[in-house]
Amino acid sequence: MTKKNKASQAIGIFDSGVGGLTVTHALVKLLPQENIIYFGDTAHYPYGGKSVAAIQSYSIKIAHMLLQQECKLILIACNTASSVAYDLLKEYIGSKAIVINVIDPLISWIKNECAHKKIGLIGTKQTVSSNIYKRKIDELGKGIQLSSYPTGLLASAIEEFGRHEIVGNLLDVYLAHPSLQNIEALILACTHYPVVKDKIAAFYDHKIEVIDSSAIVAQAVQEELKIANLLNPDGGHRRQFYISDYDYTESFVSGTKLFFDEDINLEHYPLWD
Amino acid sequence: MTKKNKASQAIGIFDSGVGGLTVTHALVKLLPQENIIYFGDTAHYPYGGKSVAAIQSYSIKIAHMLLQQECKLILIACNTASSVAYDLLKEYIGSKAIVINVIDPLISWIKNECAHKKIGLIGTKQTVSSNIYKRKIDELGKGIQLSSYPTGLLASAIEEFGRHEIVGNLLDVYLAHPSLQNIEALILACTHYPVVKDKIAAFYDHKIEVIDSSAIVAQAVQEELKIANLLNPDGGHRRQFYISDYDYTESFVSGTKLFFDEDINLEHYPLWD
Image (cartoon, rainbow over all chains, first blue to last red; front, side, top):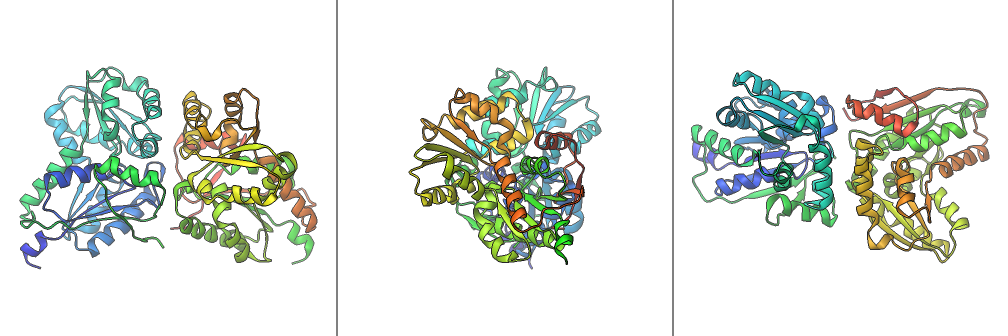
């Protein structure tokens, strides 16, 4: 395949469900000429409470499918999968595609913006217990103190209730935890959370920085494609959105709008049938 | 196999997770001499938002495993699977084992206790949208009016928070829905919900009957085994608890105690690996 042909290939993005659409939305705003294949593994949603081995095996199977579709870059748009399956996917994919997770771009950003600060983090149980953010932030040697707390139910609550008051109540319970006090910034380590970024900022009286990685990750994708000379020069506009199990309820479809800001057509891709 | 040998075989019970332990607990209290094999499909938990086809395929695979272990009776301890997979499992299992779901015993009970009443129901999205309770209750011809409402997040909230105040807040949001007012009884159509039965009763000022099917289902199992002359006469006490994906977090283990009232040893059974 020539370089030009390869540049027109799609960016493959996957997540455990529809949360990764927040990053996808940031990406299509920044790079509207790119073709996109999105895969939401709704058959196994949520990943946050699953074991490391399970998440790794799901990720490998999805990556294999995205490679078969000749994606030039694979973006792991899920913090849980980024936490426990990135190294494995890098190894598995090798030189066949660029692999980007949602954690490393954020760490680079924090390195420049948060030196000597005390920052908090919220994410799924698995993201927090993997300890990956803490390890990477400690490696920066920038005197950053990180305090993490698992907010297991938050992603599902946002998926069902959007910005309803009950999500605010749940946030109040989680954010009141001692480990999330006296912080100067808070990392949203789950792609669902940007939907309630305003509520989170309000909890802290808008006095701390709420760090949403969507735009930062989109920029990292742009940069990597530029370095590899793989930015799509043409106005291609193929966008496919697959999910592994189709739930036909209205709340699910309206949910996608909450994450992507526009209506999208979800197709069932029976990867596990 | 002789009848006596068959009587000593286990009762197989399955659910999408640990919620089915509430029914299992009622069962071991009523029939302490029975051997039990429990399978919680934590790899696919929660079933409530999955498609009919997905839930059916999971149920078939689990039933096949329980048959291989020579279970004399298979109890579908999950309302969602009972709603959409019971007929299929009956057909698949044939005369190899007795099959019992958590819905029909409750319908029989309602027939005698709730004639001409207006009753409500809460359950997962899939249980409610299957419309199975409504259809079966209408078939009774007892003038019972049923009004159902999906409470999708409640099972996961109970699993994470137990009886914490936030679960009460969530219940307040759900139970305030117009379709659940002016009722004389409320069916808890999910095996997780008995854990917060008191909170639900309190919401209605203890003026309505909150119908928890655990004991009713346990009695149905006893009755079916009696009819088939398959009650275990000996004091066998083999109890195995399997889950398809093991989450090692503490909250999960403490969660099982909430549902079963005593510590149990969960083993990983990699049915999907």
